[in-house]
Amino acid sequence: SGGQSQFSALLETQRSDGRFADLLDWARQRLAEPLNVEHLAEKACMSPRNFARAFVAETGVTPAKAIERLRLEAAKGRVEAGSASLDGIAVECGFSDPERMRRAFLRAFGQP
Image 1 (cartoon, helix red, strand yellow):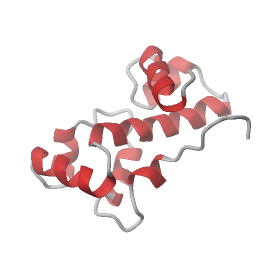
Image 2 (tube, rainbow, N blue to C red):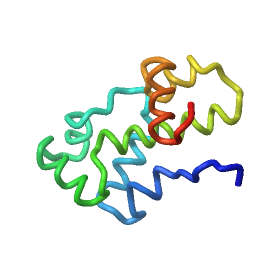
Image 3 (cartoon, helix red, strand yellow):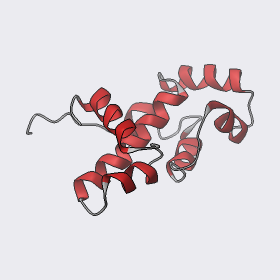
Protein backbone atom coordinates (compact mmCIF):
# COMPACT_ATOMS: atom_id res chain seq x y z
CA SER A 1 0.00 0.00 0.00
CA GLY A 2 1.03 3.63 -0.26
CA GLY A 3 2.18 3.32 -3.86
CA GLN A 4 5.58 1.93 -2.95
CA SER A 5 6.89 -0.98 -4.95
CA GLN A 6 7.70 -4.16 -3.11
CA PHE A 7 11.35 -5.03 -3.49
CA SER A 8 13.43 -7.99 -2.49
CA ALA A 9 16.85 -8.50 -3.96
CA LEU A 10 16.89 -11.99 -2.52
CA LEU A 11 13.75 -13.07 -4.36
CA GLU A 12 14.70 -11.38 -7.61
CA THR A 13 18.27 -12.58 -7.92
CA GLN A 14 18.35 -16.10 -6.61
CA ARG A 15 16.61 -19.29 -5.84
CA SER A 16 17.31 -20.64 -2.39
CA ASP A 17 19.00 -23.66 -3.96
CA GLY A 18 20.68 -21.67 -6.74
CA ARG A 19 24.31 -22.00 -7.65
CA PHE A 20 25.14 -18.53 -6.35
CA ALA A 21 23.01 -18.47 -3.19
CA ASP A 22 26.02 -18.84 -0.87
CA LEU A 23 27.96 -16.20 -2.79
CA LEU A 24 25.10 -13.70 -2.50
CA ASP A 25 24.80 -14.43 1.22
CA TRP A 26 28.55 -13.85 1.54
CA ALA A 27 28.28 -10.58 -0.42
CA ARG A 28 25.33 -9.41 1.70
CA GLN A 29 27.61 -9.56 4.76
CA ARG A 30 30.29 -7.45 3.01
CA LEU A 31 28.37 -4.69 1.23
CA ALA A 32 30.84 -2.00 2.30
CA GLU A 33 33.67 -3.83 0.52
CA PRO A 34 34.41 -3.56 -3.20
CA LEU A 35 32.36 -6.33 -4.80
CA ASN A 36 33.31 -6.21 -8.46
CA VAL A 37 33.11 -9.10 -10.90
CA GLU A 38 36.75 -10.04 -10.37
CA HIS A 39 36.32 -10.25 -6.60
CA LEU A 40 33.08 -12.23 -6.87
CA ALA A 41 34.53 -14.56 -9.49
CA GLU A 42 37.53 -15.25 -7.29
CA LYS A 43 35.23 -16.12 -4.38
CA ALA A 44 33.23 -18.41 -6.69
CA CYS A 45 36.48 -20.02 -7.96
CA MET A 46 35.70 -19.06 -11.55
CA SER A 47 37.22 -16.84 -14.20
CA PRO A 48 35.57 -13.40 -14.34
CA ARG A 49 34.21 -13.96 -17.85
CA ASN A 50 32.77 -17.39 -17.09
CA PHE A 51 31.40 -16.17 -13.77
CA ALA A 52 29.62 -13.20 -15.36
CA ARG A 53 27.99 -15.41 -18.01
CA ALA A 54 26.95 -18.10 -15.53
CA PHE A 55 25.63 -15.53 -13.07
CA VAL A 56 23.40 -13.86 -15.68
CA ALA A 57 22.17 -17.27 -16.86
CA GLU A 58 21.30 -18.28 -13.28
CA THR A 59 19.86 -15.03 -11.93
CA GLY A 60 18.77 -13.05 -14.97
CA VAL A 61 20.77 -9.98 -13.91
CA THR A 62 24.41 -8.95 -14.10
CA PRO A 63 26.60 -9.31 -11.02
CA ALA A 64 26.82 -5.52 -10.72
CA LYS A 65 23.03 -5.14 -10.79
CA ALA A 66 22.63 -7.91 -8.20
CA ILE A 67 25.11 -6.23 -5.85
CA GLU A 68 23.38 -2.89 -6.33
CA ARG A 69 20.06 -4.51 -5.44
CA LEU A 70 21.54 -6.06 -2.30
CA ARG A 71 22.95 -2.67 -1.33
CA LEU A 72 19.63 -0.96 -2.02
CA GLU A 73 17.73 -3.50 0.05
CA ALA A 74 20.08 -2.98 2.99
CA ALA A 75 20.07 0.80 2.63
CA LYS A 76 16.29 0.96 2.33
CA GLY A 77 15.87 -0.92 5.61
CA ARG A 78 18.31 1.35 7.38
CA VAL A 79 16.74 4.52 5.98
CA GLU A 80 13.28 3.37 7.03
CA ALA A 81 14.56 2.58 10.52
CA GLY A 82 15.86 6.16 10.73
CA SER A 83 18.62 5.22 13.13
CA ALA A 84 21.61 6.54 11.17
CA SER A 85 22.60 9.43 8.96
CA LEU A 86 22.33 9.11 5.18
CA ASP A 87 26.10 9.55 4.92
CA GLY A 88 26.64 6.66 7.31
CA ILE A 89 24.09 4.44 5.59
CA ALA A 90 25.65 5.13 2.19
CA VAL A 91 29.09 4.07 3.41
CA GLU A 92 27.83 1.02 5.36
CA CYS A 93 25.94 -0.26 2.33
CA GLY A 94 28.78 0.19 -0.15
CA PHE A 95 27.75 3.40 -1.88
CA SER A 96 30.69 5.76 -1.86
CA ASP A 97 28.50 8.77 -1.03
CA PRO A 98 24.86 9.72 -0.44
CA GLU A 99 24.48 11.09 -3.99
CA ARG A 100 25.27 7.68 -5.52
CA MET A 101 22.83 6.07 -3.14
CA ARG A 102 20.17 8.64 -4.08
CA ARG A 103 20.65 7.95 -7.81
CA ALA A 104 20.40 4.20 -7.19
CA PHE A 105 17.17 4.75 -5.23
CA LEU A 106 15.78 6.79 -8.14
CA ARG A 107 16.61 4.00 -10.62
CA ALA A 108 15.14 1.26 -8.45
CA PHE A 109 12.19 2.93 -6.73
CA GLY A 110 11.50 6.04 -8.79
CA GLN A 111 12.10 8.28 -5.78
CA PRO A 112 15.08 9.23 -3.60
